[in-house]
Length: 400
Image 1 (cartoon, one colour):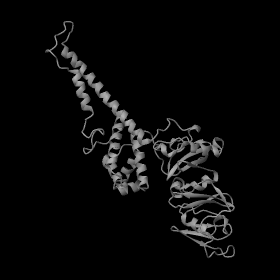
Image 2 (image 1 turned 180 degrees about the vertical axis):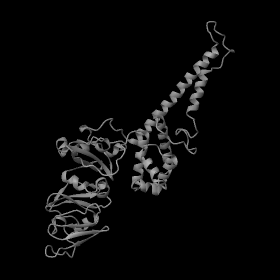
Image 3 (image 1 turned 90 degrees about the horizontal axis):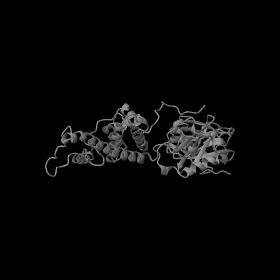
Image 4 (image 1 turned 90 degrees about the vertical axis):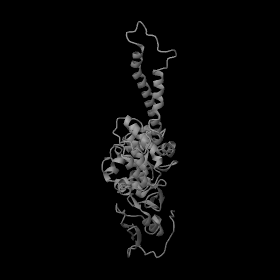
């Protein structure tokens, strides 16, 4: 069975204008340190339901709601006016329900005066439809059943329609260019397959993904035979934002693995016990709390170690137990463990983890334990099984 991240089912992100706008809002709020819709609502001083609607992409939020969220994130509001107006226009053309246009914003982003784009085109069309006669009114045609002015009036609606269509086409092309710029690159039209290693999902800028690094890491760890293919869900199976970096989920006969990257040129393969140790018990919060691996596991004493960076509790590490499971050491516990020699020191390998509460006790194979409480850690020796260390053995990790 595939390990799934718990939580409320999320509506799948599509590529409609409102979906893309919501994705940008989520990126903005996450960058501002907001944790979920309740935090957004509190800081933007809006209701929880309004915040949820704004970041889900079901419909475009009103400009007042958008401005409240942007203000709470501390970014310039004018930078978002163009995006909101363009998204509203594109959503309306796509048949989506849109909020009313506020009077303080220009109707057309290319010109601050309302209807400035359409007026010249219509004026030109009208000029074509009714040219000024040079020498008085034209003589009637004896073969016509109706006078010529009436014929021109029948042509006038079609020419107006052509002018309006031309203006609409220009607007659609402009909106498409803006959306392409916002998303970086579009997702494939169907579920990803084995050839989509290193292909980015909507909203991931191309400069953040050096695809060859993803392909090289995948191939070095056995490729399709050992890791499988991307998860069929595009938002998981393509390279996507997760915590402070990017990841791509893989499946092999139901067994999960993951490619993770904290910088464009470094991609780490996380699979097997390494995957379980990093993901459980924090699941969808794992990358945010633990951070990203700096390298593949390396030997240290009788254990294997993975150093972690960019998490809420960095610097931290994963260390294997005697039976090969990975135990997470958050910052305080890791510092205390290293001060007492780490896996190569007298304590040896850990026997258990702290669990989801990040508080508790970690015991060691040669005795002693580290107790973590409210973000602080202390070493407690076990009488008769391990000597009480009264001084720091090392100040950094030393592995023979």
